Image 1: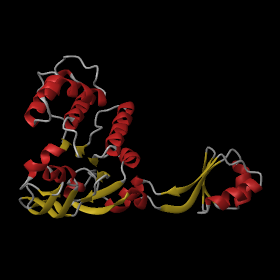
Image 2 (image 1 turned 90 degrees about the horizontal axis):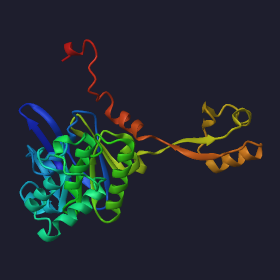
Image 3 (image 1 turned 45 degrees about the horizontal axis):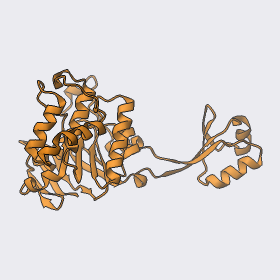
Length: 307
């Protein structure tokens, strides 16, 4: 669905994107992660032909971009750097203009298609107030509605849950999973690690303009060789495990043992009540920190004197 080879972007002497090789496959829910200023949005804009690469190749839906971007855009829904809309018009009026410009479908069915799309993103009951009076969350939902008008084969989204409350984030996550199950490939750029962890099947991590990791999420979140046990019998478990407990907190034990079945049998045989047990995996946060290192936008005192 998306493939880049040696994708590079310079602004003068500033190297923003450095030899990025993306591999987004049909059916993926692909999470594109990286610290602030790592080049994520620039990559997204190049995928859509909004910015030209300095060098490298881009293929989207089997076509070279930007050379044939006009051929693939009708099959792409996109939300980049926040939703755009005419502030003095209502949400429905904005979508009607976008639908007409994009020739997404019959004019006779436009109102019904817009109504269905608004309902899908949680704006089904919106009134005729102008968009300039929308909250940030409402604007974000409207931007998603615009991206979905064309029934896209590919969704390219930049921070789609920005400004949404926890309930709204869950609703959008469920919607994206539903769309993906129906055949839409999702490419999602986000800072929200927990959302990517719950939504995505594959992940690419970019740092200082370079793609430093790209793999299935389950592969990135490898087993740690430890187990997590929930039990009300913490003291008894300590006696049984004899120093294997690495962390104990509120009935949750982290134990230096990879075989959960054997561990469970051992605890139960000694009268320890086990209410939950699972193999521990690395968190996506752990993976991010391990490959990005000091790639933060934090500036401490004295940093201004450094080259």
